Amino acid sequence: MLALGCFVAVNFSSCKSKTDSPEKVVEAFLKYMSEGDFEKAIPLATPETAEMLREWQKDGFNLYQGNVIENIECEMISDTDAECSFYADGSRAMIEAVKTDGKWLVHMEK
View 1 (spheres, rainbow, N blue to C red):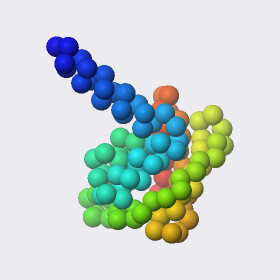
View 2: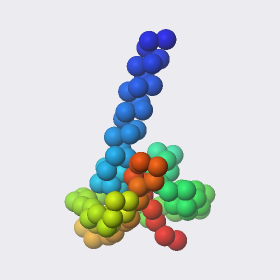
View 3: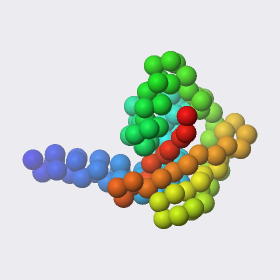
């Protein structure tokens, strides 16, 4: 029982650390997407974005597949909104992060 408790505590804290800042959630999200790992990326997204990602997955589309992601920087717009810039294979791109229920999530418009 103690081992199970430790396992749960470690996994919970590692998940939390990926969503406690806009930079961390965007970095993790883009890493998973560049690797084509929708299952790990979807929990880091807003419900609307998660729905879009499921459609992408079904259609075999991934905007970030194989991209080298670098230089993620986020600018706070408000306490719950951040605009993040990054380079994907040398091209500058933008993505939004929003804070929902105490954790940061990636939000993308269709």
